[in-house]
Image (cartoon, rainbow, N blue to C red; front, side, top):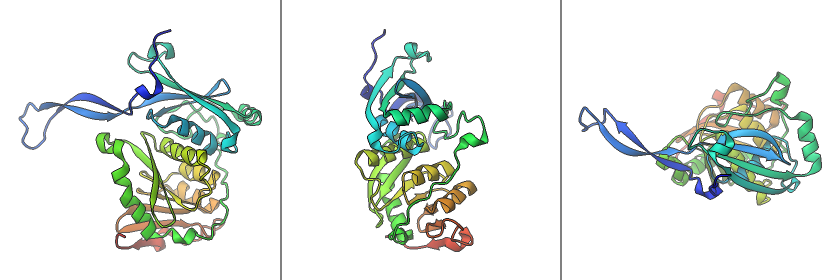
Length: 306
């Protein structure tokens, strides 16, 4: 077997020579420069020795990613159902990948009941970057049944001012994206909009799973607060949050119609198009059964930056 690099030796960013044309002040023949690119590595998630999914991900915070994925996809009921996680880099030749493209295998040792349930409903999820439904063979496999979020007496405190305050603090902490671009972030904020945690990945689903895994490992999933995403708000992001009891989410871009409906049915408070000084409340988290809001336009609001 060839020498295999340690997991930490695969950097989340890579340097690449590029030829730049058309920039103001450049000669017509352009100029060669070094550019910073986001690393994208196939990560195999293996449960009790059985490979379940291959996701394209940024090689960073992979233990949190694996745990968050297992929880948000309903493989585990709680973090305690995971007895151990081992991350190993697999040389490209051993993984059957092109030269210079190593893979990563994340082995999870999970409880017997969780593994038996996984085998019962196992399906292929070999996927593209952050794809949440790859490999599903039928509509039933989409797992779109909404999971109700318990009522929170603090939910109305997650207002526009809190959401914009949190988003304002997000960009300075997106260190990978500042260098490479093309990298999503998932963050956690208190009900007052104080940003406390942020995780990055080339896939928005992966970034969210990393964040959820980090919170789960620290027993913080029950903390009052909300998730922020540097992406659109799609149904699978809402589903992942609702499954773990997260009561509110805010996204910088627009949601999909299915994402809004999933939030309504789950009772999750859902802000979208959060670009200061404006934000749109698509689902208020107060009446999940009927949707609560007559239309998104009535929830649109503006406010000064806190």
